[in-house]
Length: 378
Image 1 (cartoon, rainbow, N blue to C red):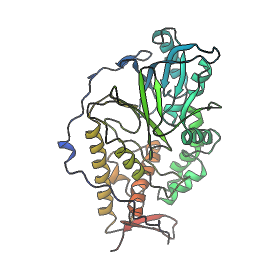
Image 2: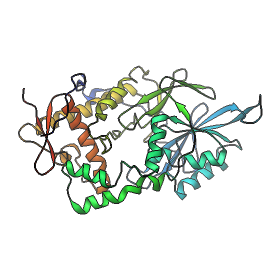
Image 3: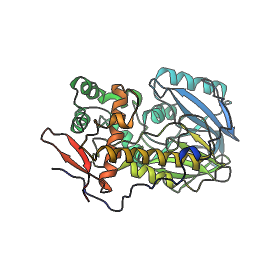
Image 4: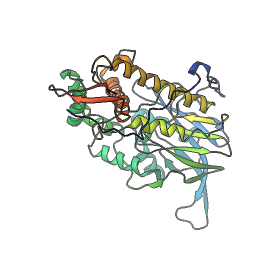
């Protein structure tokens, strides 16, 4: 028998009083506008929206260029005009070509002065080394994200390998041919992030980062990645939200083999609450989807969405004990390929772990080596 320790302070988030359908609708100030590949749209004074392709189901990432000025690295007393790039895209020929087009059509002959990365996932971190080398620009990101990227680049991967296979098998995913694909993904991260810059400037929660005319406060977020940093400019009403607040999809929140008893969903929901103070007219610049207004409504939708999944899992695990793999059809209503199943499994375990740590489910490991979850007896 194996159980997760209960943690009374970890409470299941309360269901919001108003249904999602009654929440104020999101507003999209730019309507259906999208930046063309290699071009940019100015979304706020001095802030430009770029859109780069991705070679998987989530087929794009939004990147941001901000007009900036910084002290010249070698000439005392000289202020250099240029740009800060927020996030980079993956490292592949198409993304490098798109950046070269941006250089020719958007940068106005000015250099990139720094590269700020919200978190270490490949679509955000991939080309950081190339941009930093090309422009002799420093990398800015949080310590946990930087160190996690270094680990992933040295082969300690959350995305594949023996440890990941064993973790998934222990949670009921035991199709040999599918797990063979998972095992082969040990180089998945380095295929898109081949290098990490050798040094960085540390971002910390609550710190202020001046980028041109914008004074941003760093807002740390957890659950999606180790120490994600969003940027909020209260004066101009702008939030660069990264992956923490997306307009139309739910951010992936997963448990990984490296930390199997973690509670990332609680961390993610708590992180959303840290942004509850944002005025409703804040322009949210997400990493996927369109810029929008209505942060409070979107946070309410996300709380409700996850509470509904938690309620469904409690009901399903009442008559019988179920594994994370057993509950996938309950949480995900569409067919999943192997790539999507890896993320789905992590999300399923995240929901089940939250319920265990709140004392609402018990976890037991059967003689077949599989963890199953059942309703805790009162």
